[in-house]
Image (cartoon, rainbow, N blue to C red; front, side, top):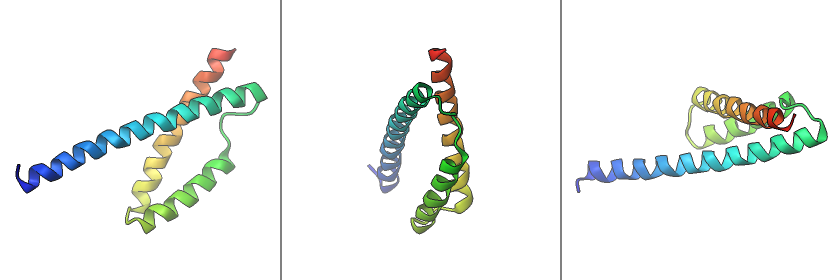
Length: 93
């Protein structure tokens, strides 16, 4: 196995880990959607997302990631989380 192959293998394993972590995170979003529905809370809570965006961007920049990439990535995750939580609300109605 060449050095290039070894790094490609590391990327492949890391991608799998990232997808597994995202699946776990979205399962938490699903449960949060259930709790919000039970308590009659709105799905979107802008203050919470603003807090997440600020703290995660700071951490990402410290880790060497670009601010734009981080914000785009977090917005994609947030959009999917909202979709999942809204879906939970529709199932409960």
